[in-house]
Each structure stands twice: as structure tokens, then as C-alpha cells.
Length: 172
Image 1 (cartoon, rainbow, N blue to C red):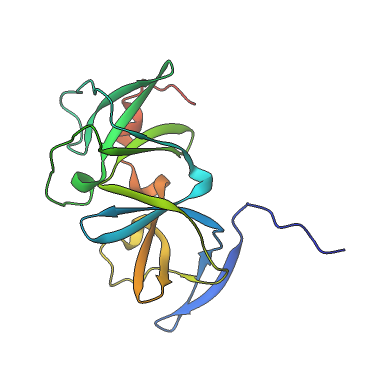
Image 2: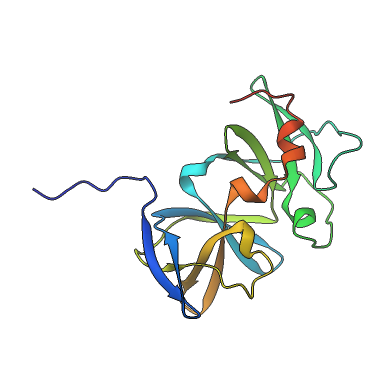
């Protein structure tokens, strides 16, 4: 009888620039845009996608932490991914999307330019990030999707600890 696939990440050995490294096997991602670049989060880390809501600002914290929201009774930090990655700040409007994700034990809302869709990832198509990428230490890998590259980000290494600490220690 064939074994049922699980959604737990499995490590696959891949050689990049002559160095043995590993890239996770990810079955589906939520793909989104910042400027004209495609990025993604593994679907198992995404709770929901919604349009921006009123933010409560938090003074004297990391610049990418733009505020907090009340999400069904939980205080959730809001991080502008453009600011976190050093891109130009854009004004928010009622159509600005937020991806509500889990980073470690915490929920965090990530503001992006546009959410594309939930997309299946063909097995073996994600490669470990090269040391040539400035985001290498905050990526799970790079997915070659036809002629395009999709940067699959690691939420646990991406979100600043200051943002998570701003929740007051509430674990969700």
C-alpha cells in the first residue's frame, strides 16, 4: 500500500556551488509580490490573508514594526516587509494585504504589496539559497518557477524579535 504524504517538512540533499546543503520539501506556498519580485511563505505557516485594518502604533521599536492589531482578541504585531527588506516605504490603502503568519509560537501580520495565490510546488524544485543572495540567512530556498525565481522566506528568521516581544509575551 502506498504511503500517504505528510505536510511535515522533509530535508532533501542538494549541491549548490559545490557545497552540500539541504533544502526543505514544501508542498504549497502563499505567493506574494514586493515591487516586481515574487516571494512566498510555506502554506503551513500562514493562518489567513486579509486586507489591512486600523493599526495601533508602537513607539520606539524596530522600524519595520509599524503597529499592532487586535485579531479576534489577540494582540498581533504588524511588520511591513518592504521596510524589513530595505525597500522604499509605500502608503497603505484599504486594499493593502496582510498575511497573518506563525513565527515560532507567535502570530504576526506581514504587510506585502500584493498576494497572488496559494500555489503547489513541484517536488525537488526548491534549491537552497546561494550565498550571493543578501537574504540568504532569512530564506528557506529559491524556487525556479519557469523563467522566474520565487524567494521562499523563513518566517522564524525573518521577523525581528522586537516585533514578537511587542505582543507582551502572549503565545498563540
